[in-house]
Length: 346
Ligand SMILES: NC(=O)c1ccc[n+]([C@@H]2O[C@H](COP(=O)([O-])OP(=O)(O)OC[C@H]3O[C@@H](n4cnc5c(N)ncnc54)[C@H](O)[C@@H]3O)[C@@H](O)[C@H]2O)c1
Image (cartoon, rainbow, N blue to C red; front, side):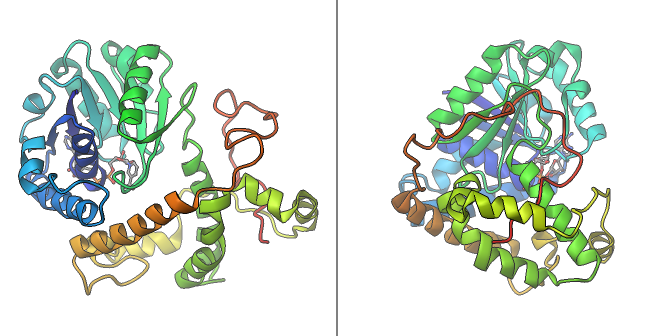
């Protein structure tokens, strides 16, 4: 079992500390905002209670276990001292990450691995030379104690052992790592989400639909099928002839990527930044963030447990089978600059 440091105790950091603790590792968690660090134990305890109450984790994982398994530490130096893996979960800003990586280069143990949870940044140019060989991206999905996907990307100078160590570690924790051959900005899942976001912001910014219309379309349309069919098997069930015809019939141009959305900017300017602020697109102010996260987790867990029983549609060649890809799945592709192909609407 490893000694793990988690730097950044925000939305992802506290949850990642819990995940590694549940994986049997000894965890130290820090944040440069003392209030955020002070809030972390309650958030972890809330998530843990949902897991134990719903039978995902056995009842011996109580609050006492949690305070022994995850120690909240005020200083960066004491957090990373002795750690063989350092998880970076600080703000998604290049300037903030650069300053931290510079500090880490003198504080981390000589062989320790730095694993960044960045959503979209190519962090490797920000990492000092001394850490290049042992820096990777290990990108999780929120909430990471329920979502199993972990994207693993090496940098140009990363030694293969660093990826293998973290891959084996997260696999042993019951997670589902996808190993990329190189940094693929946005990985697969975030690229798909980014393509959807382009459509979402255009529909909102042009006043064509409301946020509720968008969620209704997803919840009652896309969402039911994806857990069982994914995207590619769904296309087979739709019939590829219709997919082909849909490409011919499309009469609108997919949105060109923008670096901002007036709708999003206006909400943020009003302080409506999401659940933590009590409001975002929707009003969440009748419940605390803790209550809301708990309710979300209960629902996601019920779905996860049901899906374990239901299982995905398996093609004859098994989940990984199918046709040979015409382009390499993980490496070598030029980054896309437009929304992915035509959106299917069947
Ligand atoms: N929010 C998500 O759903 C999600 C999912 C996957 C990956 N990520 C990635 O995880 C990272 C963290 O995202 P988040 O949503 O948890 O953000 P967040 O704002 O909730 O938390 C970031 C925390 O980092 C702390 N911080 C900033 N500089 C620091 C430093 N030098 N030392 C210690 N702590 C510092 C901040 O005080 C803050 O509490 C980002 O890179 C983000 O892209 C987020």
